[in-house]
Length: 634
Image (cartoon, rainbow, N blue to C red; front, side):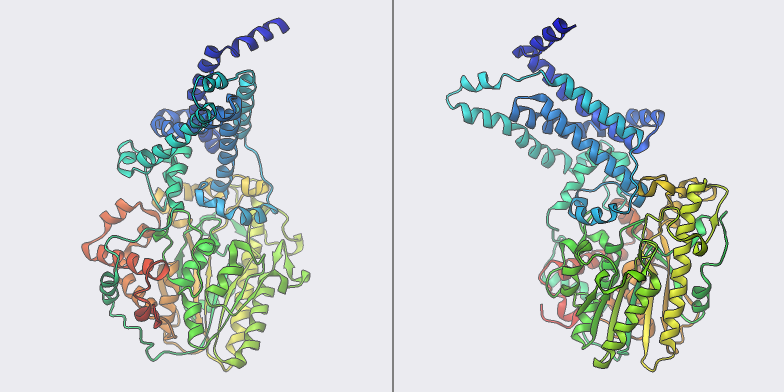
């Protein structure tokens, strides 16, 4: 046996054999790894094989990238096993992370997620991450192939010695795969018409669908285009911006508006359990919401996330900017917030408001500590401003958070009108079984779930009950004061119910029979709506109204317009635009660009193009519209 091993080792080190084995491995293994990425995602052998048969070409496009990475490290070290270990190992890890993200948030790993690695690490402290069978199979394939390639050595030294400049020859050989990789991205992967010709679906919004049709590796690579700075829309310039502003007749004047106190309260994972229609509850979850509904304006917010995405939704609410119009997978707080960033808090600060933000979690989470001051906030209170006794479950409780916000508000009120922005935390995932003591846990059970998932659903229901109680107490506290105040409450997204597996577990929603029987579009809609409540402590004439389905960036324009509260002309422009685009709310969030354009009338296309133009101008461009829409100099 030892003699056979030595003979094989010697054979593999012969130049011709080494080159042949390396070339074969460089073709076969990258494609195998692309297939294993899909097995990690799905976890079922028959379905994965059917997928590979149907989407063989997209997998092949991604295999080219993996092969070039393999060859770079193989030629750099003259050892193919190094290229295999790096390329295969990275894909194994990336496919596992993508599986977790699909389970928890409903979308796969995106290139820009690398920017939020620190934020993800904070949340990972609370996870019980599982390693699915597909990941173990993938890891075994990488280790086995690496071991088989260990004896192989590429004859690069002999090749270089035959050249006039050996070191330059060796370097150029190693860099050749990188040059080919750059050309391949530019000529193939970023060539949208070419990708579409091969059936590879590109979308800036429906990332899960994009990855399914395009395969994991190929889709991830095509989405790397989002890492480049945003490009100006066609025709961008001062005249084009002026024409877009004129569509709604915005002139920058602050009309006769009520300068009252304003609260924006983002309620973490606040939603109704309508999708879990067979669930029974030991106590009601919405008593206060139902009571306050008769006093305010209610409806459903169309959320961009499922199980996550809070910071982006928060950004959209405070700014009126549509995340769809940003590069795919962007994290605005971490990438785009510069000094003097034009948004609602900045506008109110210019009107003489005190501006406060409260988020009882790590200050640096999604760079809020840097973003908030640039957005115009005077004060930011994070978890350091709370006591350990304020923790309920794993995070600071809803009641303690809103009590803190009220205390800060009353301190600041002596200086004039106040704007308070709150992001709560108690109902943040993973909402594992046993999150709360049994005596205060709401029992939520459905016959369609196992014990672990029912216990997880109970943890979520307990958080929802506590949110409802905090909403009621908060409004009752404002009801008796002399100062006029308006409040926007909204849930950021629905929570996934993952049982004992935490974020990496199986989501219960897919097992609900009534939900699973719905068409795909209806499933997406039902899993991406959360309640909102617009409430004032004074008579408005809008009591008991239903404002219907609203995208996140329209919540403040609708509330401030209805209650006549001070607001920038940008919000009035959006209010006019929504009258034209409102029927396309779903398409604006979840349809690919081609389908969105096909669904629009010519007038709607004009408004959509104008909104894109103005958003680019205010966020990245020359701010030609700043005077008209915010009353400030460019």
